[in-house]
Amino acid sequence: MASFTDFIYIRFFIILSQTSTSILNGLGKTYIPLFVMLIGSLLKIIFSYMLIPTNLNILGAAYSTLIAYFAISVIDIILVIKYTNVIVNIREVVIYPLLSTLVMIFAVIFSYLELNKYIGVNLTTVITIFIGGVIYFLMLHITDTFNFKDIVKLIKG
Image 1 (tube, rainbow, N blue to C red):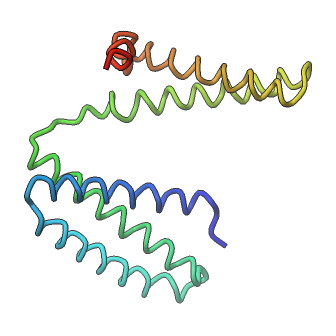
Image 2 (cartoon, one colour):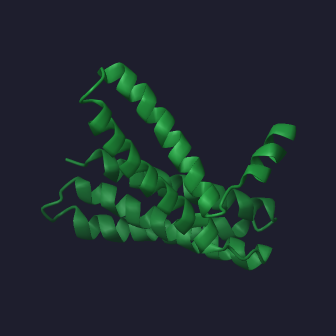
């Protein structure tokens, strides 16, 4: 049986491909997403044919969907970068937020386990959520992914 995380991965790449396809459409490159989708469809058919008869059974269909949307996302993102001339700083866009998230996760788990020894579950949950938010924004500030000037700009509109 497919796990919940398998469906999260599929959803992630579906959302990514829809977003990048929309950007390409907005740039007037309406025929390109069609061809990329055809490539994804062919990959889905090929991998379904290869994976479903194995021990995976029906999970092979889910995994082939994951592979297809992953390929569509990668191709679309490459094309978006090509047509917009936007250079994505992977460190700022992926690595620093991921690092901030991981530090927050460990802080939340640790604080929950420690606070749960002394106070009730409900209060522990509320305090842990607050700690997680503070740690996350501090990490975003430390990594200079998001600073307090950005917050002031957001508030002012």
